[in-house]
Length: 535
Image (cartoon, rainbow, N blue to C red):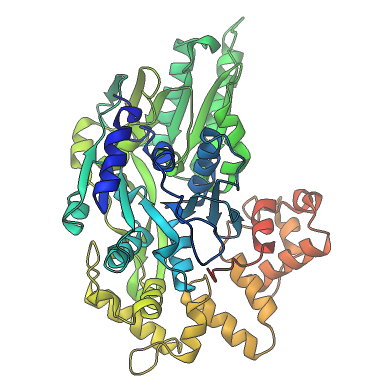
């Protein structure tokens, strides 16, 4: 079965039930086709009598910005319309919609921020919450607010989409929900495990990718020939590329008349997805080896894949509550992550998945991702919920409850910087902070800076802190000169502000970035205006 075989069942379920839960593997087409099924069935046709959209919307939320953009492009192509007309997207710093939009993709964080700005679910016919199994903090908060909205808006329909079968938390949360399970993929995947986890998973990935490339000659007509390697971060990705090229050079120099068949190495991580997306989607005359972080686990369509090499690791945010800081740490993935990675192949033809760990190691992985709300700092969500419903976050009936200790710690920390008053409500300053699409501490920083007449510089610094690294290379002897011209003796933040202001003075030039080894992508994001969430 394909998802098209479930079209009538899905549409009928949405008509007859207020909440529908759809479970289907990665690549089943549920995210791109369900909005099309609903639109074809007439959803998104009711007139909206307020707001900037002419019709009530089919809204689809995504955890990641790049997913919202790529899915909107995909669905616009399926609907044979230009992006931004019937189908559009809204993310932080970018809105590609019009008054005629019927299907709107957005990040779950964007929709939360919009609700905080005074909008409501009344603007929607249907809300599709995608990738619910990832248990992101914004997703869980959105699910809570959607359930609350059902009590007031009798016409609203909710669809929860998950790639894993572990949906008990959502089926219990929406007890009247209808559950639809899509069948698995039709093409077999040959799964292999190593006998033991290697000490150096990067080098092991290189060796396995090269072994496959040498043993299976590329044939452009076969349809699926490419390799996807899952690593943990940018450094590991470029280390892979370096070692791969070094091994190829070594092979070519050690063997006479050795003919190495070309292969395109394509790095893939969040800040360059838009740059490499065309290369991912179109066939080459050579094999592609895509070396990615976990950004490729979901949301992106990567055709022509035959082999997935899964390192078994990813980088996770670990929050140290009492230190008020987070750190990225390399940790084993969950079984759910492993299944997502394997699911990147087998979509259009048979495929292979090589796991660089043993079957026993897989059995010892955590089964599912821990809900982010139990792992992260709650500051933003504490302010958000105080503004939306004037309730303490640990008192809310969320899909997974947050601990009283974490909640109280956040309230007290925010009280110390003046966001909450002694009665536990938002202060006047806190009400201003709640309107800013920033972490509360950064919002408080901007409000304080306004009192000293330097709000513009504070906003620039706050924006700088939201983007990837401004420099494209690490500090070392060769690159010190490029960095020193921006250096401020008092603060890294003022150094970053120097970078930004000098780039603006250059006319926002790409050549300036190349000369001084700066990240043009990050600087252009800083330059964009804050989004308007007035509804």
